[in-house]
Image 1 (cartoon, rainbow, N blue to C red):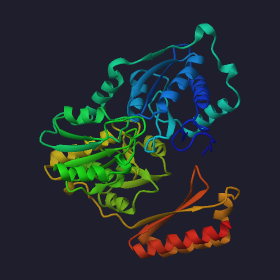
Image 2 (cartoon, one colour; image 1 turned 90 degrees about the horizontal axis):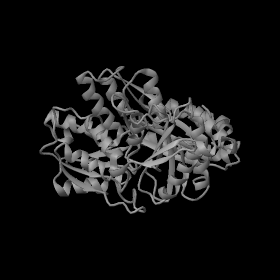
Image 3 (tube, helix red, strand yellow; image 1 turned 45 degrees about the vertical axis):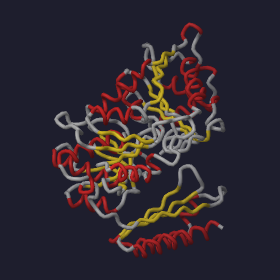
Image 4 (spheres, helix red, strand yellow; image 1 turned 90 degrees about the vertical axis):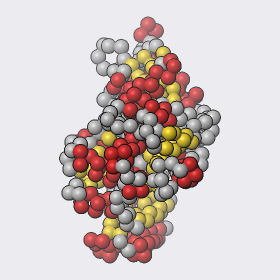
Length: 455
């Protein structure tokens, strides 16, 4: 895998108006990405969307100027969920799609996510090429005065309307949500209009939360990172189901009618079971990351299904799905990719699949959303000096011995995962197994040895 300096596991991200998340960088990125995706002699087009962060007003025009300066036309759609940009990149026949969002982060941060004309996130290799273009100077990429691009904004929420219809069409036409009261927490983010609209148009009694963005409150004590608000509202309102999205609505956390919160692993289990019964699941497999709970793997095995694991990051899940011909994947954090309908994680769409199962079964959510009992899982981050090599630490004899001993202790009853952070000088130590005390002992023991070796 190519290691990039600017791009992380999900595009470029950082504190707004501080390096690297500046208007200058966005301008240069627009020029480099526009040049990379200028192929052939047709008019080239990029579609740009954003969430509700204040800094979107700074980054959107900077990106627009960058794309226009290399001869690419720009379509601006305003606030829209990230999966909406993936959809529009294909629907509008664009050469590239751009989403301005830092996902679940606080308003101070922002990010730039790039999609190819096929609606998929860019590979590490293409991101590295764009970064190389940026590093080598963009003066030579400028178009002539008569070849500059143009910009236009889709008026009256046209992009959001297209996305609403797109998402609704993934819900079985024979079903309705009539009689269901649903709490939806939009995190004051990109889905603050579209998510309540979709649910209402399908017949639900909608109780909206997090639908008053002001540029500063995205993800603040709400949404998928803080689902407690949603769960409390479900109990207070006597609702049947609750769903909490993050700032760009590409991930979801849900709860049942009792307020019990459910993560991405349980969501994958429920959808896999429904799709298996309906014959919609392809490849007898579900794709998830190394972080998914062992309980999910065991549950899928009981259904005769395999769990295909990838490194952390929804684009790696998507790549494995594409490679293996699988159509269901996601992350424990709530990124759920429904390959039958979309190219990237879509929280609202995943919620509709759960609601379809709810309607079909006639059972309460509490009977559907708890397919397995998660095994105890513990994660500890070990920070070390930036001058220290991660590889040297992991190759240290004491660390290798500690890891081997931990794996022997867990053996067939658990799992140990050691991975380095892609953005910080951290080594993440995670273990899971049937015995919570053993899991804690293993994690603390390995972490202590790594800390000692880093001194």
